[in-house]
Amino acid sequence: MSNRPARTALAMALADRRRHLVAVALVAVAFGIAAALGSGVAYYAAALIAFAVWMGWFVLTAVDWIDRADF
Image 1 (tube, rainbow, N blue to C red):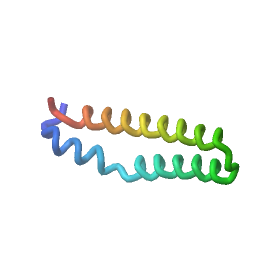
Image 2 (cartoon, helix red, strand yellow; image 1 turned 45 degrees about the vertical axis):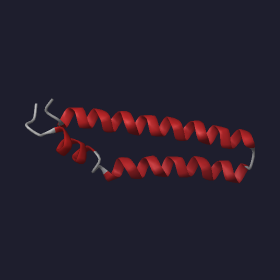
Image 3 (tube, rainbow, N blue to C red; image 1 turned 45 degrees about the horizontal axis):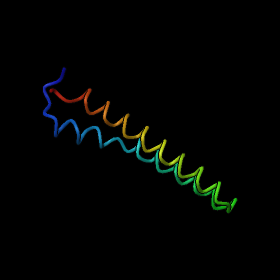
């Protein structure tokens, strides 16, 4: 356990730029492929991929925050 307050731990968890860039890149690639294919099913799949990426980003950030914070 650390001695950091929750707000400082949250700021540190959100400071991981690599996690943000990977998430944005995955979503951009998914929608880029969907735009190249141009079908409704491809856009639907890209939206599902974007949702899964967002959920993964959220869980990883939340776990990092809880790990760094002292509750």
